[in-house]
Image (cartoon, rainbow, N blue to C red; front, side, top):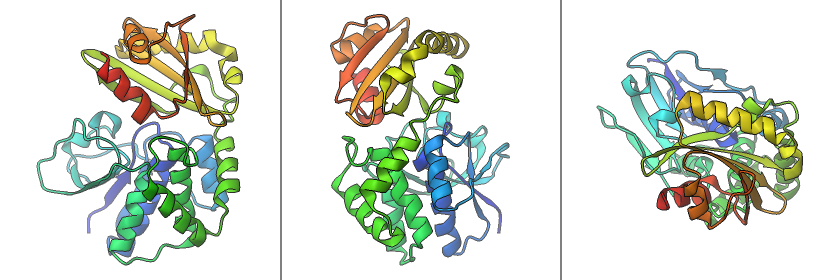
Length: 307
């Protein structure tokens, strides 16, 4: 049996990393012993907390993806967010909760995507469908991703199904959702060791709004002011990114996980899109967005609609 590479998107978050590990576990239980989880970037603080808590080793970095390699994509489908060489790979499966974009294959495949808050919610269903038992450690990884992607069920991306699955997983993992979830989210807000360049790339996605090439980055925090104390350096990093990567707009969202608000920095030659989309006037390149916590549902779609 040929090796199968399993991985999530670039700049991986907790869902991307844990879904790779969980999918590896499921594949092996279903008989694919050559399936192996990988990652396309550095592990963030939140994910590090999760892996340490459940005593799970991080996936290896995927350096090269050879032509015709067998792959399974989790938590993404957009080729621009995937591994180099993905267009020539043999994509066997996709498990995702994002819109389908820039995706094409030469052969039929197993593809499941649902409008839920987290990929792990879909993976839970796959375990149930295949009558595969979920071990406590695996349940812990799955629960952590749901908490992360839904901001402990506060994000508008969260569905009833996410909450129901999370409760079942918490029983298996034997953890208290509220106390564990808050500690996990707080662990992800420790951003002090990151340079401005690293900060704007921790969780950053490429998109388009009309003819504008857009980059939207997001970090979570318990104190917006603490993150923006080096605002000038962050703006320099953003401007360098815009110049190097040919973006018309870069939106950097600093999200307060306690109060469910975001402060954004918007730079580029199409900041008018931001002002129109959120009905704001940028002051010192910034705007405060009350109640906005989801890039997928409250930022990127709104930018696209108002380009």
